[in-house]
Length: 98
Image (tube, rainbow, N blue to C red; front, side, top):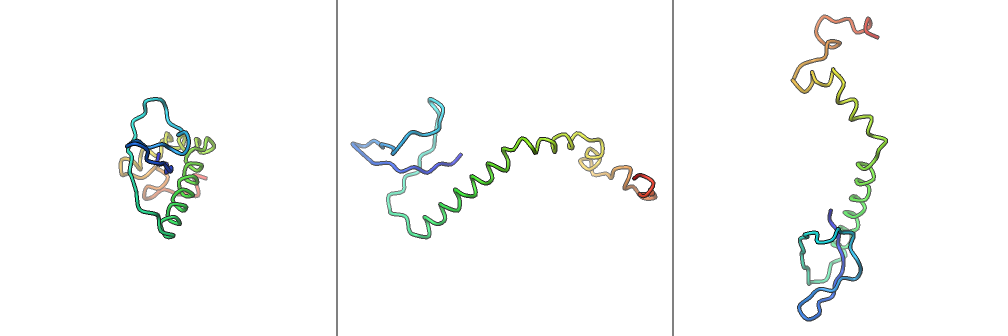
């Protein structure tokens, strides 16, 4: 997870602008940027945040669990081994398998 927050330096310590969504005693990596952000940097951050939120919604979607079931289907195992499922092997009549 990547989160950007503002902080103020006081007596060698950083005081964050608010609480963080972290578990107690979580280890984090802190990057300090002292120069002001350019308009281009701010726009890039906004796009990255929007992308992260969109991807989180897309990937954290229980409706897509059906695709995990498809991975367990017998024909998928042929693809994983580099083969073709029986339906697509040479000489098969596709119309007969409908």
